[in-house]
Length: 182
Image 1 (tube, rainbow, N blue to C red):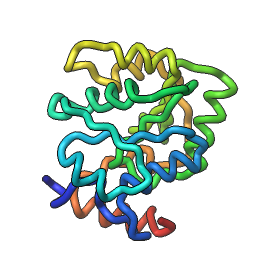
Image 2 (tube, rainbow, N blue to C red):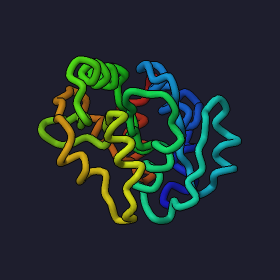
Image 3 (cartoon, rainbow, N blue to C red):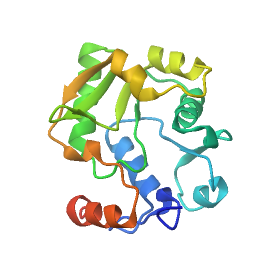
């Protein structure tokens, strides 16, 4: 464990676990159903993020795509959904609202927010594409390749969409720079 603990349980400057913060952010952006997909340490994490609906991915060792699939299979009624990795931290509410508004107006298969031409780590996908992804059978499928083919790029003014926090030093920098409001 590079962080010394599960990333989902890193405490934000506001004192709440990161997974709970990310779930709250999605709710604030208008998401009716928010799922936190967990693999390793499922019970430990679930017990420490009250108010979050958690889904267990028993195939977590096969990679992130299996977690995306587990979440999509567990969703109920929806027109589209965000995929927000727990370690893509510091994203502004405005960015999520912009993507959601764009989705409602244009009805794309998927949206990939970009910053200065670089693809962000988050995505919005339609119900139709979600069903296709949930049915994919190959363990080596990569979401970024599906999005490369199917997503509309949406330029945003939020460099945090590029974040992928993997070390305690990166977490410290992000907290100091972007998460003061948490």
